[in-house]
Amino acid sequence: MKILLTSLAARGHAIADALARSPQNPEIVSIVPAKNPGIAALASEQFVADLMDFDAVLDIAKKVQPDFAFVAPDDPIGAGLTDALEDIGIASVAPKKALAQVEASKGFTRDLLTKHGIDASPAYKVFTETDDTSIRSFLDELEGNYVVKYDALKGGKGVKVSGEHVHSIDEGVAYAIECIEECGRVVIEEKLIGVEFSLLSFVSGTQVIDMPAVQDHKRAYEGDTGPNTGGMGTYSDSNHSLPFLNASDLEAASLLNKQTAKALLDECGSPFKGILYGGFIATKKGIQLIEYNARFGDPEALNILPLLESDFVDICQGIINEELSEDMVTFANKATVCKYITPESYPESKDNKGEGVTLPDVGDNARIFLGDVSESDGTLTLGGSRTAGIVGIGDSIAEAEAIAQKLCKQVEGPVRFRNDIGTQEVIDQRIRLIEEVRKG
Image (cartoon, rainbow, N blue to C red; front, side, top):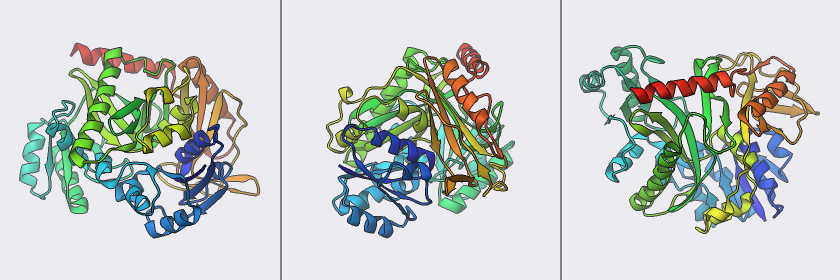
């Protein structure tokens, strides 16, 4: 069994780790945009190539001749790498370009849900003309409670929310026009009030198998302050729900993933094969969709994959062959807390790039997944982005958080992390907020 993994950073390390644990003992060959010591330790060979240079990726794939490929990052999925690999006879765990529009275009997804009668969207409009009058009119209609979304892939950083990133109608109009000028379209939506969470599913056509729910923390600093990042940390609970959700919330999110997979099949004429990642928000009206991604999240993969007890290679083959079933997927009933170590200067600058960092050893109740780090003669040095995800695993969120926190404090170098992720104080804030939202 030979698997081609096209990925990067800690998410790729977590995927490689899950593949390597398979009893099928697969040979993993990786293609990465920059050397990753975590992936390299698990792969028989690591090629460095721009994942958006399809000719280079295909040349490697032809040489490797894998049984299948796992395409992890959003940009190559959105640009059609799965289609290109299929053209040379290599199947992939990742959707084709047409289906990946569910992430690549926010407007496509909103229109898809509307067309197929899936009631999970706020009021929204898609604009393609830089007519500030019509944009301003819709923002006024939303009474200044709005979200402006760049309608293309932008590394998770193309969304601006009123009251957080933009603070007036004028600023909203200006950003909307900027989006149209850059990518041709912008989506403007009603701002939803509630508590966010993620539910990821393994999907093969209409077969949809859920993973444990996760909550992410995007903001750079404690108390959910500062600029948005790729994610500073995440947590999951031992019952695979979250403390602020009730059973009907999780059932609603699960149903939405199933309905969306069916809508994609009907709309595109071919099955979605890969990871469908729903970003949801629990509101007074119920569960609403914020957005979909067509791949594992980072950090979410770092929480979910260490809990997978069944054969990940078997799941991947089930996805590709449309033979995915519930009995293929088993997760441990454990809680996880992931805290990201980052350079002290992140995300404002890359001033710490090239400085040394030392990570602690971990036992069976923790994992460290390497992100933007380099290794030379056994010494790790910082890149400019997130360094490593440290994951504590326990019978409760409190136990997992204590494990992750202890390990994070042992890291040596010019780094920082968010102490508050996974703490009871933060969880209680979420519980109070959803109680207030539901009371109205």
